[in-house]
Length: 256
Image (cartoon, one colour):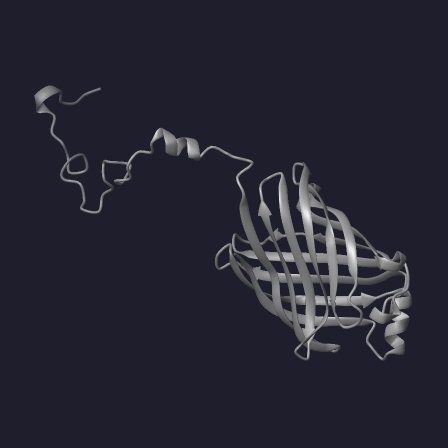
């Protein structure tokens, strides 16, 4: 190979000269002081450290042939990776008044990766008699990242109930998320005061498309439907209420 060596070598314009004014500092720390050993220790994982979260999963307005109003679904917890106090609530209001809903309070205990058992109480709100239930259930992530929530209830006068819910989040882009969900409710005996007959009483579904402005703030639009079944559907027909209702929804999802 030919060329010049030693003192005859000169630097071209691409090989030398002053650095641009916008160049990164040679100090890769950018002026951030080094962490002490105490700080490094504080960064270790601590499964017993308490933390808290509040998720307003649905805060929306809806409109359909069966009427229009607002609905909510929220949950929050406080605790560590093993044990938490868990609060859950969902429902809807029409005409400025709560129409149907419930609030639940649980002690949640981790029994496997991504799975918790829960025990607590539920209180029904809205129209009709206010019922109080003892509750026990499980929630977690099933294979293929389906979110599963299954809860059994026992109330006064031999009443029993169950609720199963499935959700999935499909990332269309890094910010656009499609969320389908399905929920079924069943009761062990008739409760005419709340318009319920024994058996599977209601199946609900929804499909919501949200845009995450930030991970913690996401407006959405979608469609939701509700179908009453069995004897509960018969009671609805007798009262002149719709058995199947489809609604257009718009709302916001917020983490706090």
